[in-house]
Image (spheres, rainbow over the protein chains, first blue to last red):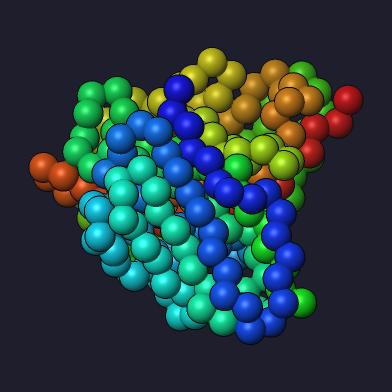
Length: 117
Length: 118
């Protein structure tokens, strides 16, 4: 089974702190994603990566950065946390190439609920 | 730009009954995938069912089936014989298909929270 893990289920940080959210997958997936989930807004893509050291902005990258030094690990960084970044953060991974039986499915981690006070 | 719309923020169904969750999308692409994901309370999001746009036959997975209307850009999920374990947030999602390799960004709807009444 594909396993995507996130470093924390719950996190409380203060405004202005630098926050690191870690995501690890064990299926050798090329693609990794960070989403933000808010009520009434669904999931919105923050950043994604299709290879080590490669990254692309998603729909809402402002206030965030990412790091992918190893294929299995994708980190989301809040440079200076703000209260409007209080949210649920979901990490996901997927294969880059279409493989029969597994077309484009993304596998999700359990999420990190971040509260910034 | 592609968009996905779920117009039912909340739905409720009696155990053993059937419920249909609605999803519409907008795209100018001819080839794409559509998905329904399930997010149970405090648990990981999992894929329920997927549909390839070029296939006319509606996908089914046990008690879950879809009604895919390509011309109408509609993709509804039907849950038959609803069970208490079906209670969850359900998200409709879309991705385009690119030949060779794909960084398959998903576009999600806003979700439908399904309650199952015993």
